[in-house]
Image (tube, rainbow, N blue to C red; front, top):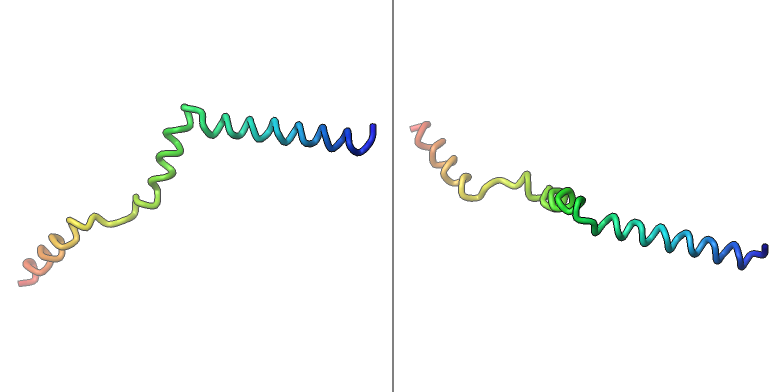
Length: 63
């Protein structure tokens, strides 16, 4: 067994791993998890419609 045979085997293993990860990533049962993760940056943003009303309520309570 020479170095080129080992390189060929390593290439095939990497190809199989790549195909496995691709199938896993695009499988339908993980789609919900990925959609939730994609929306995480927006979860902490304040609602722009509530902010002025809350400020107005705070001012009216002080008066």
